[in-house]
Image (cartoon, rainbow, N blue to C red; front, side, top):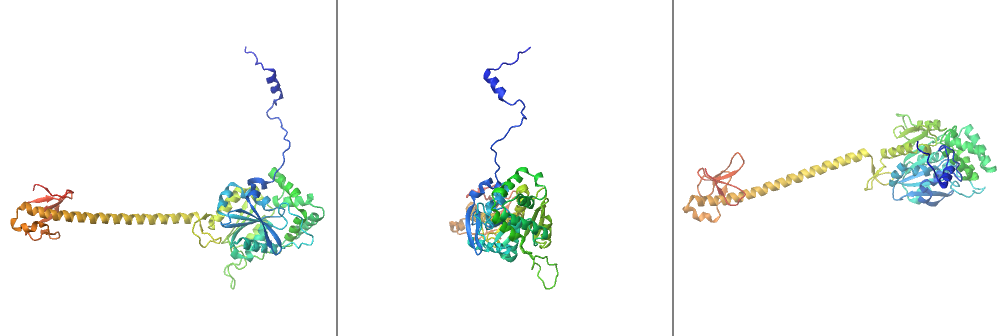
Length: 469
């Protein structure tokens, strides 16, 4: 019977300090939550700018090469460019796509990270004035046309700007966009929130309403870490007074005045009162703004717009970034933005782009053209070979004719052996000697020259080779 293993005192001490059950709870200490804005180091990757406007300065963060087509983003209530777009624009699929674009993250006045409190006498811009500030941003950076990407209140601002300046927006991707004015319930709740933010700061009621605005009902049943990070941001990273001003402007918004014109309506243009550029209208199935996006979709032209509801999420950028990135990528490809060519042309953003199908047919046409050129070059080479062969055969026939006259011993025509004799190839006669010379071929294609009694085979050898008759 084997004896039990023995351990030294040091080994016994180490074994005694190790947990017996590997499933025992391990207490984690000094663990702190970090907001997603640290992912991908978007703060370090962006160039920070202050753009002057008629309503104060606007904070703009530039991500990417400014020589490439532009995407302008606008955030939602309680967030800024970093907290709203950091995780999504650093998602692997988006990083690969954004190599072809430059992103301009616009932050509403007073909503950037660490912003000072705005003065009490500061007249915060209305929603229309916030949209008009984008004109100063485009002019400051020399942008002729942009792609809009907005969420919530930012989507409403971008839709206003696109409706007022359709020539400056090439396409729109709007998430949880509200196109109507605020209802009584929303106006009442948000009015109380704005009052509490000014007087008491960030209260629990305001946090709960902001969580409902972004996550919908029962956010605690979803991604616990994500919910806690957003709660921590609302508690510590938001200036309450500045947010109250933005909320007050949002609840006093007017209607976008968009309407889908029925086809065939006399005296009206097809898209006179709706957005003229392509629009993708996105919402989450758990979002409280699903009905608002349906209303907004009913006001858009169905020929250049699409509505998408992504399942199992409300905050689409954080909960379903892969699906949103794929939808955005396909939307850009469908509108001709995703694959850049080196030749400048008539793209809304200043560079020509093609979809995958058009690139396939362009390559197919190029291959067909190259094949035709190659066949033409091959035919030209064949014609050159035929001409060279004809010249060689003609020279050899002349030499053969001279040698043939020498073999026949025609002394009377000795003066014609100086090489001036020529052949009548068409008639098969030798000129000037009276002999019935001809050129024939056998079944193998070999050329023969001579009379009926004296035939000479024409070979690559410049001298004729006699052949028995």
